[in-house]
Structures are given as C-alpha cells and as structure tokens.
Figure 1 (cartoon, rainbow, N blue to C red):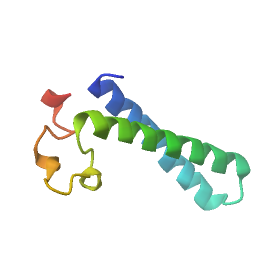
Figure 2: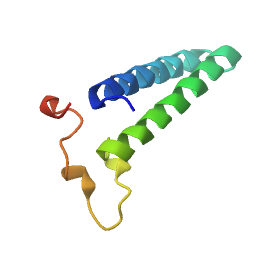
Figure 3: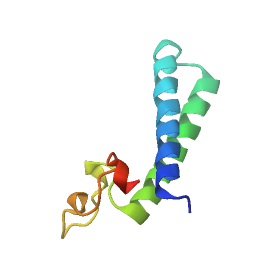
Length: 84
C-alpha cells in the first residue's frame, strides 16, 4: 500500500490522463488507440480511488458509502496539506 500523498499523486496523474484522452476523443471519437488508452487510465483511476477510500475515507462527496454516518467530515480532507 502506497503512502497517502503518493497515492493522491498517482490518482491525480491518472485523472489527468483520463481528461486529456477525453479531450482528444472529442475530436477523434473513433480512434481505437485513444479509446483503449482512456479505458486503461479510467479503470486505473477508479482502482486507486477505491484503495484510497478504503484506507483513508472519502476522496469526494460521492465516496461516502456509510449509510449511518457522514464520514466526509471525520478525517482531514484530501487538499489539506498537513493531512498528506
């Protein structure tokens, strides 16, 4: 398991790759290589986000999976430097 800040950096890198691929695909929607690239990085980003949330709590508002408690406010937020 990566340490928290390293995991966040990898999530950011994967999200960047996903957004860049999406921008390219807007102009080249049938490009098989770009679609494969997009899927690969999208899946990796989802995997990393799942790992993060399993160990450190919700990464976004959508990551709160506990129906009995609002966990979003229980730990330092991802952008708080002292938490990372």
